[in-house]
Image 1 (cartoon, rainbow, N blue to C red):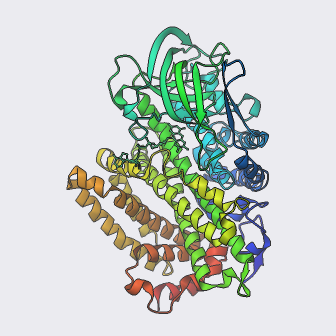
Image 2: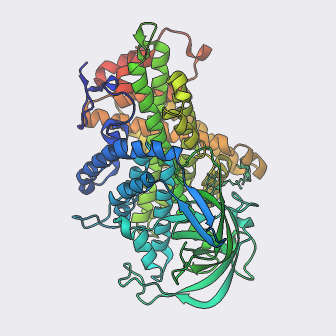
Length: 619
Ligand SMILES: Cc1cc2nc3c(=O)[nH]c(=O)nc-3n(C[C@H](O)[C@H](O)[C@H](O)COP(=O)(O)OP(=O)(O)OC[C@H]3O[C@@H](n4cnc5c(N)ncnc54)[C@H](O)[C@@H]3O)c2cc1C
């Protein structure tokens, strides 16, 4: 086996992680052959080369400046000054200068802009999957900062879809490439009495005689140049407001006489600065003293008559917000992948360098198995979030009313909540175990793993908890018939498998796929309480089956395209650990696939397909 130092090309040689001191001062994109494999398959041919170059530049920036800055910012989080010394409200959030520098680096590199508008030298935007992937890479270094980026993209998406042009200047600010003209997004939904239960929102919106028409000279494509938005005054209390001082904040509130529940909610753009240039009427009461995601300020806000501009039609706010939430949930899933990627990298580097009992610890069978398990989890998470992201983007790109659009919508509805739910939990588990791989150091502030764990812990909570997302899957199956698209999606992946190095894994997934269909059949006729009782079980099974099938499809593709069976090993270990019915927990036959193929799975060494067949078939 040949070893390479950290090289930019997609090499078939193993990566030598001992060449690094830590998972910093390196290029996260070049090192991450898992993400590169997924991107290679997901991007259009026209975009691939351009995007690969940009992502390599971005991986270098995140792995160096942004990672360095993020470590400092975590120790010097934002501070809130609600009042000035005269007792006047100023709502001023003071940031560490390195946070501003990270913002400049990210936005000027197109982290939001390139997803919405054509970057210099190109005719079209790169689309939302590119925006998601860049944010996932950012999460290698700062998952807290990934939150404002996600909400900036989310607010832009809502305005792009539902504003008739009155708020164009906000859209341009949110999608600006230069830092000077940039504004960020935020969303204030949660109130004390309800986060999951958004329909319990009590914030009110009083109509005024005023309208807002902005100052943007040119309209977005398809919007009215002279459009105006009705201005309302919002009163109420919002309990968790991340990126609190954003100029592009979207807020849910109820107009007078609107119905109770989610049907009565309208959506407003509530800027930090009012149209007259004065501070908007609100009080940033205090910042939450949080466990992690320190770089983003999360506040309690009292809306005391703040002006808000109605977006689209009244009482459609929850439907509009759902569009933003889908994107936010995907961002959460890509952020989870970013945290897992960093935790895994730190673990690999440490294990390659740390000596105990006379050897580096990556020579010991039990540690090799740990690293294989972590690496396979990572490949699984990446495969699933890409599948969800691709369907989200396909839905955006296809014509409503067509079959392709319906299928993409149904798949997106099933995959997005599960992606967010499963990867959020996997990120916590991977970050937690990475602390242990680093031993005592892993628990100490100077090593990034403790921050990764603190940051990861919010991923299963915000943007919808695991339970709420599992219930959302039931809704997608019940109301949107998501299974109609999901079952052929899995079947197609499994039918693509031909090579004997992949077939045993595909057979295990096939059996689990039958179980999954039986579970769907049972729940289709079950009463509501029983369906809810099993909702998370179903979401977890869906994740495993879809991921197993995806990995098999990827494995077949890699053999055909590159003559490399490494992915077949990943698919095999995934399927065996999820679906293998082993006696005595597999402690039976002396076979240790992770130990034998450690270099392939953990260090990305290529494997000759035919040579692998005996190991995976047991022949
Ligand atoms: C750091 C941080 C930043 C945040 N930033 C924002 C922000 O910017 N904007 C914003 O709007 N919100 C934000 N949130 C709020 C977050 O989205 C909510 O906290 C989250 O959605 C959960 O809502 P909740 O706190 O009201 O908990 P609850 O809804 O009370 O949930 C409590 C528990 O009950 C469970 N549960 C609820 N209903 C059911 C059910 N029907 N069946 C089974 N279990 C159920 C939940 O899964 C959860 O485990 C933030 C939260 C945090 C921690």
